[in-house]
Length: 509
Ligand code: TEU
Image (cartoon, rainbow, N blue to C red; front, side, top):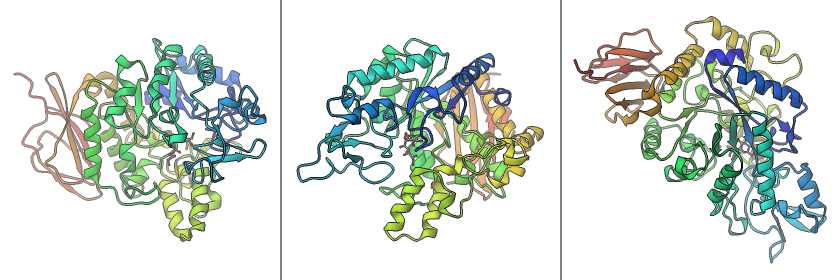
């Protein structure tokens, strides 16, 4: 906690820590009001919240309410008979007229989204694993039970909620509508009124299907829904269009610039975005769009600067702040994640070569980023004296928090400085965004303008030198990943992954 305080963050989003049989790393909850035994007890949790409060850090809980575990008492009751009062807590349907599943909806983790329950002969819906039955949000009793549970946590002093796949809760499975269903925003307004509304709490919706227009529905303060959204448009840019996340193609920086620019400008004053490169579902950014060998430190800093100078609320995934890299896997037996395991089995069956599937998993698998935090160079990187869930990345001897803290040039201090700048500079929070279009393809350059102030941000996204030229002088260097002087901006050669931010305001003399 003191390490995070030193980094300067204001809140911690915890992935789910509730009781769970761990079919999907805690995203399958069997008791919302108990802590997973592996993590500790409720009194440990209360201590965590207290200790965080003392350091002015808020604890954001992961709210997973599209589905529960099939081991949740509600589901155990629900499947016990058609007459049970909890039957309608979940989405049960009869087989289709021709026999078999009610329709061809598919699970995110592959295969049919419908599972036959032998006892009643009916099918239940699971948009994720078979052990994650979907709750029936059309049932008012379900919504009330969820709001009561949220209030239980609010009363404990948490700082808000990250809402797992919240865009799915308005689904109409019979019409094959999953995301952005017609009642979604009514539900969120109801939730807001009955739980966090009017309180000093942060709420962020995980909304894979959000466009800027949809993001405004969630996050326009006048609508009383959420504080902000996670939208994922930039995240799919290295995938073959129309195929899956496993079908890879190289990232085009031009497209990345277009997507960022669109989100920076289109929300206007009517919505709020979050800023992130990676999370527990995504590969580590330095391995993905940076360079985790020769230019690890340089590219990690560049990626940090390019993102943290944008408008929105930045999120840092544990270890990103020290430039942690993807773990390399050599065989499917090293993988725990249900998504990768199911995809592997599916593709083997379809005749793909094992090596090709492993290339996809090493690029995009969720376990890439889920290895333990690298604290120091002792056994298990100082993370545990027990056996960790996943083995520690073997590079922990070189990359760890202790080493980063000792090196004033480390990635850590770039993040620390960026966080401090944001807290002190209204320009970063509120300034307007202007893309500079006339640059080399791999250079992302933009202005932020606020009142009479203008900052210029220039980032080289490639491992090659690039030319950047502007007929202007800078009055001050704000942050950079080099030792250079940036007064003169005309015809500059950028090093691989160079990044700098300078004040280019024309102050009245
Ligand atoms: O993720 C939503 C989701 O759709 C992911 O499965 C995502 O599609 C995938 O990781 C990208 O390939 C949330 C959680 O963040 C994830 O960890 C859970 O597995 C999922 O919901 C189910 O609760």
